[in-house]
Length: 251
Image (cartoon, rainbow, N blue to C red; front, top):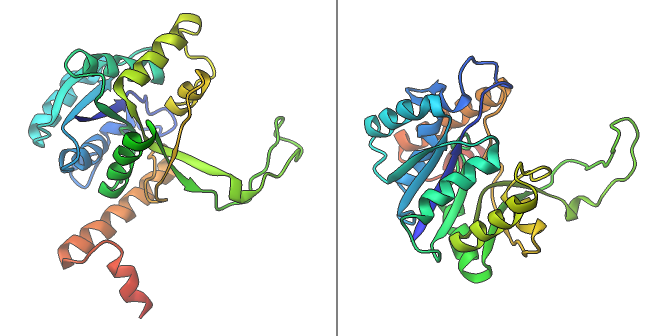
């Protein structure tokens, strides 16, 4: 059993849109539906559980029906922060599935996760028990705790950017959450599920992602999203395989 856990609890403050960014409509669909489409259409995914802001649960229920996202088995109220919201969705999945199910934890505003990345995550969990989607670091990294002086310049080849999905056995990630919540119920310092698992001594393995798997957070990200969506739709209209347009332009 492979389950997508989607966190859709963002407030949209950085977007300045007046509504949660996941509900912004782009090309006739809210961003959250663009994201859910990837898991709905994936032959590797069996079920979807979503955590959502309380005031938008009915809206999201209506959207999943309107756009035929039939794999959704539960939409739960989000918590006080991102990790608490993910925990609630994991608990909903745990109530209806075995603990040896694989869960792929994903941002509701990462609408370009590919089937290849989904499959890589599942295979990595089967082999290693964990998978965190990452891309190589392309810029020159600088460490500065105060933000004023350069303190260290780590080797670029040793640096990666974490994305999503971040995937684990359902039982393992729930056990880690329960362990952390005993002494740190507000998840202080826990940035993501990778951080959570590392904090309880679990090994976490990398899966190669792609830079197109963007997170739509700022107004600038919307421009990138629209451009990538137009590129994808052009590919589909011309019946081309992914990347074929770029290859043809090089000729």
